Image 1: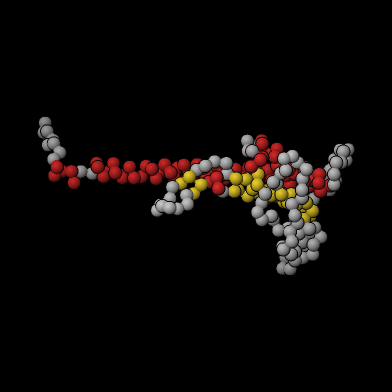
Image 2: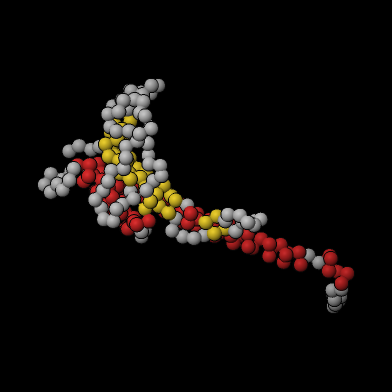
Length: 206
């Protein structure tokens, strides 16, 4: 059997094993960062879907017909806003999210009061209705706002629609920092991202 000659210094430039190790050492950290980024951004999309569902539940609770036999403790708009905040907090808690992390939307949605003629001026939007929830909620509830108009120019004529808008933001709860180059620079931190949520529901009648 023929014995292979031992590797000499002259053979090292022609040997590719060292290049493969160097390429692997360069690719593996990049691959790891990409996998982690996909995971954490996937988590961000999951949170976005959850808070959007919570806003939808809040809007649905706000426009639901009032209970005829329940005690009324305030105005109809006050009760609707309180019901919306309770529904949002319940949906967030059910999804294992902290309701106290909800943030007031900036700016608030530019919606006009119900009955405003077309076109609606977005310079004076309806303010967020105050709630009596404790602690004070950062969920913006805008009851009795115009969602659609009866005859906007260039569109099919239909009945106007009034309803309630529920909106808030939610700060991404985890730190995931990506390095940047060259220094100094601002690294990407997912906890600095605020995920927006908004839902609108038309008014319901008994």
